Length: 269
Image (tube, rainbow, N blue to C red):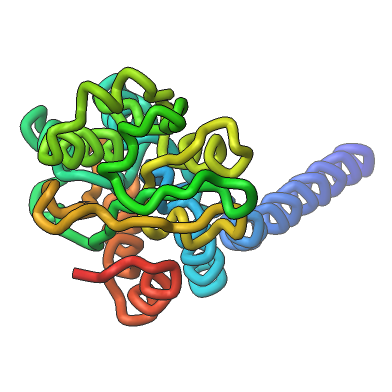
């Protein structure tokens, strides 16, 4: 009988120890630890190459105020970004340098309803290298025989290239300039080729010229020679983080964001 009592007491103590162990790992204590280690939400933002510098600064401000969000950028030509979105690339927001690409995404049903807005406006300018560049003062002079390489955005997918063709066609010199054109995959490549002197001159946005001390602006596009350079933005319909995406879009329309955009030479809508 004594042995049986001892066996029962041992089993009871084991059961009590087991219950204590379950309490130590009970929901609440473990959940709090997991919350402390929670990974921030990643927002994938596709943005025109001309927005590179300002978007990086905006991201630093936003992430400081929203430590639960991490912004991951894909900078490139608006046409290439549009195609990536249409092909299912992971994207939560799109900031385009032209209406054309945003229109295509809207027509294909890729935009979250009611989120599209016109955000910014820019200018198209003609640039030459800061040092040793040729004496060029206007777009009309691009037909000169001593100008051999003109850096332009590839017009099929790069908005600045599309605006440039409109300008050159309006001036009646498109075919002559195309014969000496070298085409960049985005506006920053056009800027780079002009900085290094690989091109005699290039056509970029005013904001791109402003971030470089290796080029100088010699002419602005003639008035009414091209469509207005409007930057639309929208949330992508397939986003898994709709509320966070809408919040970042709202932030880029805020007064604080506008000050940063204007710092980089953009005009806010």
